[in-house]
Image (cartoon, rainbow, N blue to C red; front, side, top):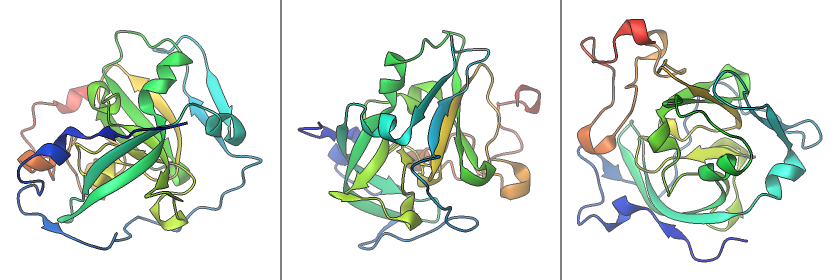
Amino acid sequence: MADEPIISPDTRRENRIPPRQAQTRKWPVLHAGRVPDFNPATWDFGIIPVPLVDEAKRFTWDEFCALPRTKVFADMHCVTRWSLLDNLWEGVATGELLNHVKVSPAAKFVMVHCEYGFSTNLPIEDFFGSDCLFALKHNGADLTPDHGYPLRLVVPKLYAWKSAKWVRGVEFMEKDRPGFWESWSNGGYHMRGDPWTEQRFRDENETIGRGDL
């Protein structure tokens, strides 16, 4: 079981609020579409096997819940300009996946797949950050459905749309490609999303050439 929490580095900043953000005391609810139903008997979490992972891996709900737990103390920053400080998350570290599959060194990016075909992309070094986890609990209680129950990704160093709700699996990629919100048709959010440099939206002149997507 998780014991002492990992402290997210950004919580040690003298000013914990990124540029043009405002602190909130309540946790706003924001998502596209309805909250999905959850059936623990049919839910699973998958690691897509080809071409950058040695074998397919699937976890049932019970198997995923039995994985080693970790806790993370971190802040959350939404691209819509609110920041929620002092969150205590509990779940499974993203790095735990490396104990179950072998990922090729050619993998440079990750696509996180969620319910309803939602997805978000991340650089692999952000995904495997020491303070990143698949959260099951928030501040000691199970996540609520509106906030991602049964499972959400938490990547504290990036804007909160990268901390995708209702996660069902991951895909390792050699080249980056946009997820749901990063696609031009859905708003063109930034391919990375660093709140400290205000990477809110994609730029037509981004160095990630469209031929790489």
